[in-house]
Image 1 (cartoon, rainbow, N blue to C red):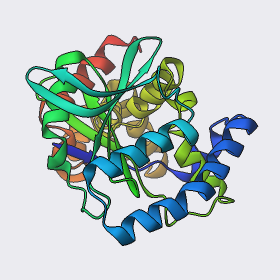
Image 2: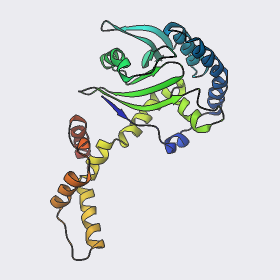
Image 3: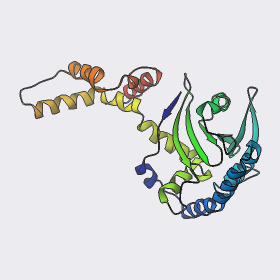
Image 4: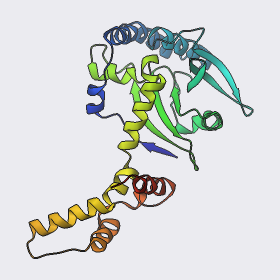
Length: 256
């Protein structure tokens, strides 16, 4: 299952990107856009696309070509096209498709299987032109949440928001400390966690106080407010299922 979530403009502009990294991303984009256009016009296959992607990972995104990038990493009888390592540990997996092909989430089936087996929380699907990046929930059932979907032929090297998006694929953006911070931001913005917070006792108490303030003489019990929220305000998909239960447990663990 894939949950759709794009990076907000606020998140893009609040990320701190070192100047030498943003300069490398912009210059790399200028260099590889003509390469990708030419490859697309020739309709090159998967292997040639993978060579271009490998060069982009090194020259645009800052990975050491012979230390950080590994091909065809095995896992449970399956393989993924590329694995990105930092400090010897696999941080993300990349599935490459031919540049002329349309990217579908089901292309990641085997890569997701390997990711969950190895505990890798970040996977990327690309055909060189289009890049889709996902965070992987390692709980049961496994699901992915997309946090980046971009077309590198449709963005300008001087576009700061585009460079901020590219940074999410860079080595500096996928280092463990950056991933941890990004994961924490993603969890804080989870619709399941926000729904659980809305239904928590402190928030329901605040809503009751606001109702009395706005409508003098009218009182609503906490249970009445909760029922209204559950049955008439919130969407059912944020209240049911494993993720909703996990979010309620998280809120319950934190002292009020």
